[in-house]
Image (tube, rainbow, N blue to C red; front, side, top):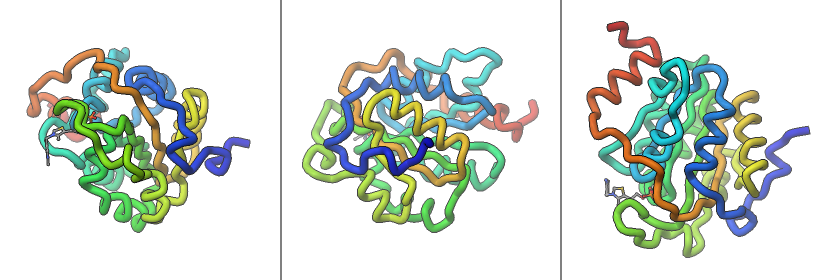
Length: 210
Ligand SMILES: Cc1ncc(C[n+]2csc(CCOP(=O)(O)OP(=O)(O)O)c2C)c(N)n1
């Protein structure tokens, strides 16, 4: 039976995967108009690149262009406002390290419809590849577990990632899935138009009618 307990809790046990590939795999598993929040950095570039979906479903994506560490807080707000919609935050390791308190907040709320995916390349890649602390011993899954997010694990490989995403969409969260990724360039660049991103997202969630 699929269970979080079958997935590793330590970063060294996770295969280094490709951000675009796993983003595409994740989108392929969405089925009920889930909202996806892409954090600053290349997380949202590859979300943009991988989101050529039919029926305008790109509109259910939000792309954070300005500040680090906001994918989880924004996703939490969406999840609270629309409790019947699963909401996924895609966040880089550098960005989540700036906002660790958000993990304990999500845990304390027990936000059932929230899934956090950490894309850990050990670098602030978009600003030049400076090293982050995850390459020096910080383990975001261990930090998440210590913050009270008991349903946290590393994706050992691509098929384990798909299994974890499917599990997180089916069962109550909150969930946190750690993914080690390489430093390949993203496949596209997110459109730099924050008002349009915001309006499209609100239309996708049904909160803006025009
Ligand atoms: C509060 C804040 N500090 C610094 C920056 C500059 N900055 C933008 S993205 C980024 C790196 C993001 O790293 P990570 O989240 O690991 O994503 P990656 O670039 O590796 O995809 C930095 C330092 C910023 N936008 N906001």
